[in-house]
Length: 343
Image 1 (cartoon, rainbow, N blue to C red):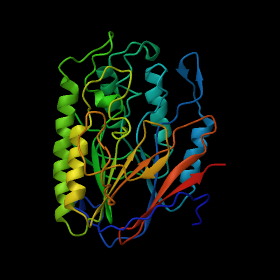
Image 2 (tube, one colour):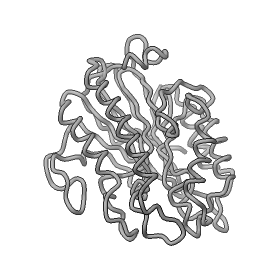
Image 3 (cartoon, helix red, strand yellow):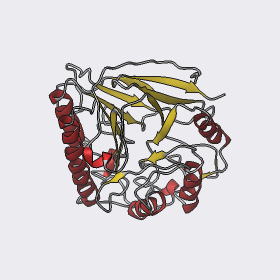
Image 4 (cartoon, rainbow, N blue to C red):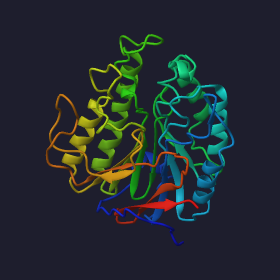
């Protein structure tokens, strides 16, 4: 099918496969074939009225319809932020976004962002307890070991309560949806008077589970000669937003993650990693991961970039909200990234 308005083409060579544990569930069985997937997130942000999200969202519906009309797209990944950062975290937001997710004709995999839980303690978000909102997210979007969307796929889930972490395969790639939001991954939350976690209990437990999951899956990716591409999707930008200014953070919530992926790409020069994120609202691709780590101010100071690590930051919704990224994966593991414009 012809792809419209494809730009920013980026091609990378890689090697590929599927862990046996996933193949047993019926995913990735058979020879690798070309496929594409949609990368979206930081949406819907608008319209807003009197500090509340307003539904329906015609621009978001048009985006979904455009993805649905593309027969090449096997599934979509939403990297989180399903509301604006200055609107109420009321129940209706989660209900309406679930409805939108289930209008995707193909599978939809969602990983949470900071706007829908970590920042809900803010006055303009309703002075809500973030942990209450996180539990609502888990209850609403992750009731089973399957994707969302009208057509679903089985997902390998992390241990409870971290049911939002998911793994699936589509030869020649392994996919990991990892719950790692902005606002410093909910670490070092001492700059607010309305809600604090002085011992970092939530971050510490979730980060440990995240790292265990990464250890397990990245080891499989290293050992399985068929795996040529590892795709990780999270909301946070751990590079430019190593420490978000003005929030009182003193230590990054992303250090363990960056150290782990750096070790993997260095140890597997013939395999590729693609990291998809949002958070900083700057659509881009590139190679921000370098061999120098850490520094006092950022995770990736000047150094030699790893060519086998690529990052993709998705489009955030604006008043126009016209673009999404289409990632095309070939059987040999090479991939390209292009912009698709929604009329």
